[in-house]
Image (cartoon, rainbow, N blue to C red):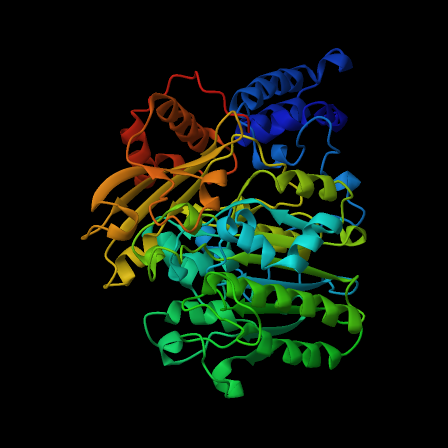
Length: 560
C-alpha cells in the first residue's frame, strides 16, 4: 500500500477521521489496479482533505507555538535542547483529574534519573510587594545586595511586572506551589488533593528534599482554617524545620525571623551525600504583619522597609552558603512573593481588598547559564523580566527545570484552572493579560466574605493597569473602596509615594481609552493559547465582558 506515501501528510493524519482512513487503506490493499502508480491516489485525496481539516482546525495558535517566540529569537524546540527532551509520563487524552502529580504517580518516567540534575531552592516570600521593593526609594535602599545582583549578575533575573492571583495566602500560596488558580469546584478539589505541590515531584525524581518555614506549623496550620496550606509546605519533604520544632521565639505574629533558618539549611546541605541533587523550599515570613525589624540596625521610615532589609541580608547569606558549600554554580534559586502588601494604609488591607501594592508581587530567579538546557533561555528570561508576569508562572518554570527544559501546564491541570507559563521557554507577548480571583478564600474564610476580581494588562505605551471589582459587605475606608464597585488600578510611578495616605493609585471611573484597553484584554483572554479552554467563557471573565460591553467583532488583534 506504499506506506511511504504517508510521510507526505503527517499533519493530515492527525486530523483525518481514523475509520475513514482505515477504510481507504483496506480498499487499497484488496484492490489490484491496472497501473501501480494509481494506487496512492485515494490516499492522496485523503491527505488533501485531511490537510484542509488540519489547516482549519489549527488557525488558533497553540501553547507549543509560543515556544518559538519572536522571529529574531532562537526557537525553543526539542532539536536545540542540548539534553534529550524528557517526556511527560501522563497521557493528555486521560481525564484531567487522573493526571495527579504525586510521589506515587510521578510526572516523569520512573526510569528518569536525577543524576546531573541541578539543585533547586524555591523561596515563597509571604507578602513581598514588588511595588514597594522595586519602585520606592526606601525599598531600593533597604535591599543593596538584591539590587547589586539585579544590576551586575547576568545569571540573576528580576521580573519587574509581577502580579498575583490574590492578596490572601489561602489562594496565593497553593498557586505558587501547584500552578493552578481554580475557578470551579472540580479544579478546587484537584488543587487541594494531597500530593499536588511541586515538592512531591522532586521527591519522586530522587532529590533530597527539605522544607524550612519561619511560619509556625501550629494547630491552625495542621487542622484549622489554614490546614489546606500544610501539605503545600511539608508535602514530599524528607526534613522539615519550623519555629515550633526548633523552639524559636515567635517575634512576628505566627512567625519567627527568616534568618534563623540559614544555619540549618547550611547544615542540611553540608550533610547530604554527594552525587544526589537537593531541593529545598523556604517559606519566609518577615514581610508579614507586623514585619520583622532588626533592632540592632538603623531603621527606616516604616517597619516594612526594615523587614526588606532583613530579607536582603537573608538572600546575601544564602548565596554565601551556596558558595561555601560548593553549590553556587550548580544550584538554581527561584523566589516569589505569594502576593504583595500595602502596609502603609492600615493593618491587613489585602484581606479586604486589592490595590497596586498588593497585586504587584516581586519574583526573581538565579539561573546559571551553563545549567540551561537551551541557550536561548537566557535571552527569553531577560526579555520576560520587562513583561507582565504572574505568580502562576513560578510553578511551570520550576517544573521545566525538573523536566529538562520543557513543561506545558495545559497538559497537566484540569479544566477550570487558570495557569501560567514557563518563563525560561515562552517569550511573553506585550499584550499579555493575567487574571486574579480569590475564589477559595471568598467562601472558606467566614470572617472575610468578599470577592475580588482583577484583570491586568499593559497599554501600547508600556504602562500597566488593572480593572478590579470588589464585592464585600463593608466599605474599605482606608483605600476608599465601596462595597460593590469597579476600580482601575495604576502601576509604576504612581506607587513610588508611600507617605501620602491618600495616594490610592486608583480611580472608580473608566475612561474611553481604558474601556478600549480592557476590551482588548477580554479578547486576549478569550483567544490566547496561554490559558486553558473554558477560562474565556467562565463566569469570572463574563463579569469583565459585561463591564466593558465587549462583543466578538474580530477587530482586536491578539498577538499570542
